[in-house]
Image (cartoon, rainbow, N blue to C red; front, side, top):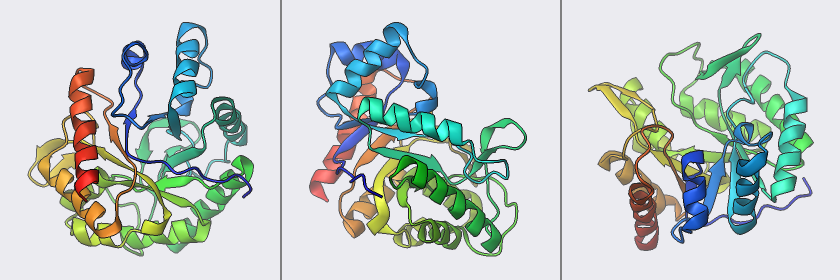
Length: 274
């Protein structure tokens, strides 16, 4: 891969359209980088397109994909990958991440589905990641995902995740909230899982809120404030691995920009004392 990685730092925020004008008019110095789903912006023109270009000229951005469907048995959408490559070049974006899941089977499913934890799946997914990296001419980061049922299990979740990352020789997007959600739903130790992550491959991290359906069932919604247990898991990660860039995800039940900035500032506080 010939394109070098720049070093992200600090705290980031997922950019949502309702806040685009407000952020342009009132810059947020606490935010060191923004994240966008390229699917939502590739074809964007008009006023929003111009505003987005103004943002990418002022701030560092990362791309976090939603529809690559890296674990699908459908053919890889290489036209879409080329569109992502052009989008990243246009806006000077160096980092692209995706979920270790799939969202298509003879058509889009509009949800992130779990991949079987099998050796065959490791080879299948890793080959697709390698192809994406070849087209983009850079490594991509793969995110550990939340899931609610097993579709086949020859190995543990962490062993499957690490096997895919090692076989594909890709980077990692560490989602702290997903570790916590899965640890409650599937009864494993979140600290042990986190400690086994390949820290040397982490590009950046996600932290988010979730919904508690029951004491033993959480739903990863990105629609609530971050709870203390998830903050504590992030602090543990900083203490064990060192500080890495961390992005606040909030996709639903959007609060005011000031409330979001309070959580971004909390990330930075933990980074400063780690």
